[in-house]
Structure formats: structure tokens, C-alpha cells
Image (cartoon, rainbow, N blue to C red; front, side, top):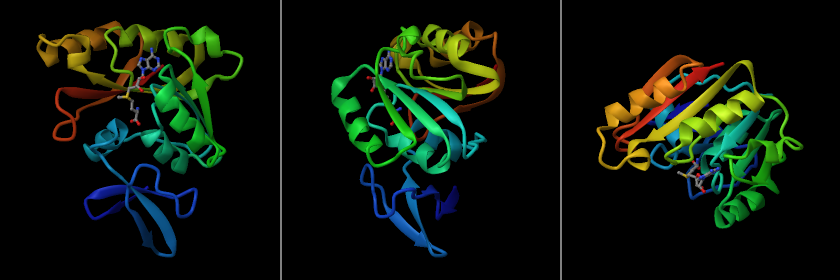
Amino acid sequence: MMKIGRDLATENLVKGQSVYGERLVRKRGKEFRVWEAKRSKVGAALQKGMKIPFKDDAKILYLGVASGTTASHISDLTPKGMIFGVDPAPRVLRDFLLLSETRSNLVPIFADANRPEKYRHIVPDVDMIIQDVAQPNQSQILMKNVNMYLKKGGLAFVAIKSRSIDVTANPNKIFSEFKHAVKGLELIQEKRLEPFEKDHMALLLKK
Ligand SMILES: C[S@@+](CC[C@H](N)C(=O)[O-])C[C@H]1O[C@@H](n2cnc3c(N)ncnc32)[C@H](O)[C@@H]1O
């Protein structure tokens, strides 16, 4: 990962491929994809200074992978790893399936993350869970998957959108309730995602 101007960028694993219309930039003989922070909550958290260690051989369970905008950058960062992307929405998962045909470290899983036992036959124990599901019960979804898949010492990145949990409540109240609900995990870092996303918070937690 490197900085190009104000943006972060990842070295492109698939030369010439732009996944979601992001700019490709050549630097020192290598090709990089600009990571648009307004299109990716992990990208926004990194821009806000969160330090997320991505090991190049990490196994990652991604809940709410959608069409793979963010997962594509994580794919660049983990060339020897594997990203298991879960989503129950057929339209977006179809796009992720097409993306996975071009990148061997992506595995699409058509499933609901409320039922983690449904993908036990595909997903091994993982080093990291990323969750971006924008659901009212997302703390329960996270804990079920952490309990079933995350290795001890593993990390969980969570994006919380307060309006998806309660439209009327004060975002700070939602964020502190979320932290309370996952208090079995150690809170490593937290960042508000403004100006990239309004009323969002990202947490990095450790098991
Ligand atoms: C904000 S989008 C994710 C964007 C994606 N993380 C990215 O940055 O490229 C939220 C996604 O969560 C998915 N989702 C909602 N409920 C879910 C559940 N129970 N299990 C897994 N995914 C879910 C939605 O289908 C949607 O694709």
C-alpha cells in the first residue's frame, strides 16, 4: 500500500484491471489502483489513520462483501491469502463472482451471515473478520462469526452505520452500545469516518 497524492493505493494484482472505475497509476515500474475512501469504509478508516495490519498470506472472512469494491483492494494486499466474501444479495454477489474469476484469492459465498454454520464446510479458521453489513443486529452477527471462525489473537474490523441501527438515536449512543455488546473483544482502535461517511464509526477489535 502506498500514498499517491492524498489517496491510498494498492499494487494491482491483475495488471490493467480497474474494478469499480478507480484510477490506475504507474509508479516505479509498478501499477497501483487508487483506493477511493468514499467508496470503501476500510479505505476511509485507513485514511483516518487506522492501522490495519494485512498480512500477505492472511485468511479473511468478509461479511457483507457486496460486489467486492473493498475486497478487491484487500485482494491486492493479500496475494498469498484468501478472502471468503459472504453476501445474501444475488445481484451484488454475481458481480463478486465475476471478480473472483479474475483473482484466485477471492471466494464468493452466497449466504446470510446470521447463519455462520451454513458456510463451515468452506471457511476455515481465519486471521481477520471484516464486517460491513449495515444491519440493526450487526453486533450479534459479528459475535456469532467471531466465535465460530476467528483465531485467538485475530482481528475484527467493523463498520457501524448508526442510522442502520436506529435512525432517530444519537450516533454516539449507538456506537457505545455496540462497543458494550462486543465487550468480549479487546478494542484496539476506533475512528469516526467523517468526512467520507456520515454517522459511521470503524472499530478494530482483537479476540
Ligand atoms: C454497505 S454494503 C457493503 C459494501 C462493501 N463492504 C464494500 O465496501 O465494497 C452492505 C452489504 O451487506 C450485505 N448484507 C446485509 N445483510 C447481510 C447479512 N445478514 N449477511 C451478509 N451480508 C449482508 C448487503 O447485501 C450489502 O451488500
